[in-house]
Length: 327
Image (tube, rainbow, N blue to C red; front, side, top):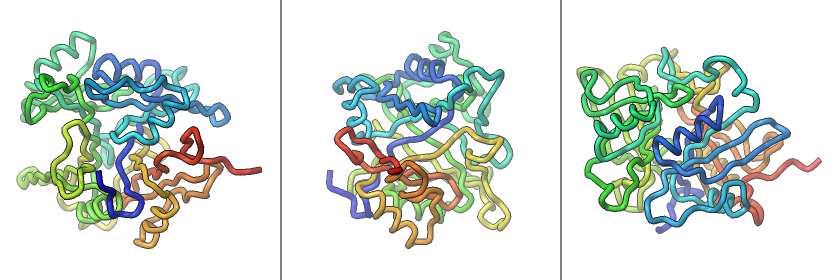
C-alpha cells in the first residue's frame, strides 16, 4: 500500500474502553464475538493493565502469544483496528457498575458494533449464550439491527453485512464501528480526513428525525471503499448542535463519566504529527514529551475527544511505543 501524503501516515489502530473486570470482558469478546487477544501490557507502578483485542480474519496466521516481545512487535505494526480494554487495578472488587457507558444526556460516546451475515440468527445464538439485549432485531422502529450489553453495560450494536461473507472466509463477527456524537460535522470531518488519514466512505441524513451519520474509514489511496474486514468511525450529528455556542458533549474522561477513553492512531513520527496538528490550531491533552511516558501523545479533536498518537513500530527492539523519563 502506498503511504499516505498526510504527515506521519496515520492509521486508526484502537478504540479504548475502561472495564471493571478484564477476565469477564476478555472472555465475553472472545467467546461471544470471536475476538482474539493480541497482547496484554501490565504497568505495576501505575496499577493498570491493557488488553488489545481484534477480529482476526480466518486464514490469517495465529498472532504471537500475548505478553511476549513478538506480540508487542505485532501489535504496534498492526494494520487493523483493535479494541483496547483498560483495567485499573482493584475495580473488579467494587460493587455494582463502575464505569459510565455513554448514551445519557450530553454523552458523546454511543457504542461499538460488530457486523455479521444474519443479525436475527446471531442474536438468537447470543441470547442462548446468556447475552442480554438493549434492543433485539425485531423490536423498535428500526428492524434488523440489535444492541447487546457487554459485562460493563456498554452498548454493542449488531449490524448486517451488505453481503454474506462467512462463506468467503470471514469470521462470523467483525469489529465494525465506534460511534461518537459530534457537535459540528464539518469541523470533525476536517480533522479526521485532513489530518488523521481517514476517508468519509458514506453519509446518511435523516431530516425528519433531525440527525445525520458520517462513516469514516482508513482506505487504500484513491479508494472510497472500506475494506469489509476493517471498522468505520461513525460520527453522529444531531442537527442544530453546531449553532449552540454553549453545547458540548462529554467525552468519557470527565470525573463521574469515565468509560470510553479515546481512539488511537499509529503514525511514523509522533513529534512531526503533533507539530502539524498544533500548527493547524488543535490542542494537545498530552504533548509527546509531557508526563513520564515520552514519545506518545494525546491530541484533542474538535469535540475534545482524546486522540492518542502512537509511534508505529515503537522506539526500541521490542517495539515499545514510548520511553520513560530519565531520572
